[in-house]
Image 1 (tube, each protein chain N blue to C red):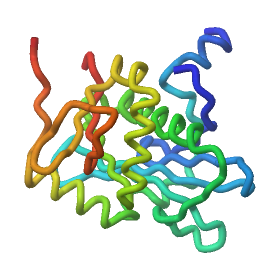
Image 2 (image 1 turned 45 degrees about the vertical axis):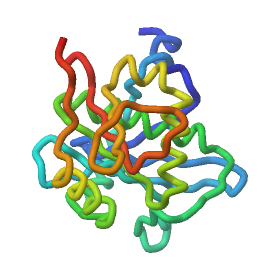
Image 3 (image 1 turned 135 degrees about the vertical axis):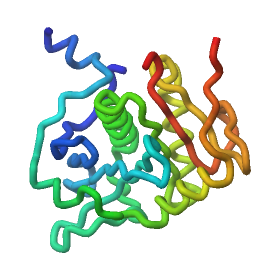
Length: 51
Length: 148
């Protein structure tokens, strides 16, 4: 893969940094998570139209 | 989506990402976090500034670092990285304030043609999920990768 092709990819190249694991599983944004759960409870999942 | 975006770092499961915003206010570390909700395969996306001293995350700070488009493009690229690893995942996002949710709408609008080729996009409006409309403010957004 060329550099140009890499730049055009939607999926980025991600460098692994194990120090970020300390944030994993922590509820860092409780208000937003509550809002997501509330939306799910009220209206459920979006329906994807099937052809 | 050949847009300027910041380099991303992530922990091994690709649920926590970090990047450095570079702008008029200097270098600001930002975290993007995908958190499981009460429903399997439905994740909440949130991002905010990382305080260098306390390492706490603040999603209400307005950085004004002059790089909004690049930050939004970076968040979108993190969604692609996350949904590459978890193709069945839904990702939900809402702003910490109405103006920030509006900013998300502007971001989706700007990159809509690129995004909608790859992602189903649904917009929370009251008690409904609606298709995206560029001029309408929504409460939140849910996306899922296509072709999976």
